Every structure is written in C-alpha cells, then in structure tokens.
Length: 71
Image (cartoon, rainbow, N blue to C red; front, top):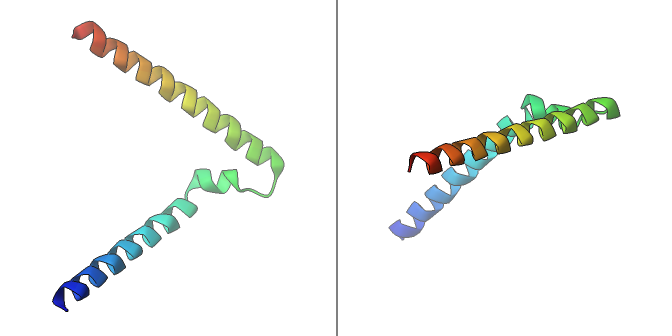
C-alpha cells in the first residue's frame, strides 16, 4: 500500500515536470518562429535552424579532430 502511494507520487511529480518543460518549450522564441502565421517568418526560422545545425556539425567535427590529434 505504501509502495503504491510512493509510485503514484513519483508519477505525478514526473508528469508535472514534463508539463512544465512543455510549457517553456512552447513559449520559446524559436518555437514561436517555427509556428508563425506568416510564411516568410517560418522560412526564416527554417533557414536559421539549418545554419545552426551546420555550425554545430562543424564545431563537433573540430572538437572530434582536436581530440583525435591530442590522443
């Protein structure tokens, strides 16, 4: 009985935490750009996201290369 109550408390805590994270994600600037009503703003968000992914890929490669050279 006590174990079931403990499990229920943990489940409720996790649900509340996930809900709070979802609210902050939906209020983010980038999320608003991606779901904007004007198509030009959505295209800008897609381009911005693509540039960000490319920069992160290059940075990851450089970090990997530095780790391989120093090893």
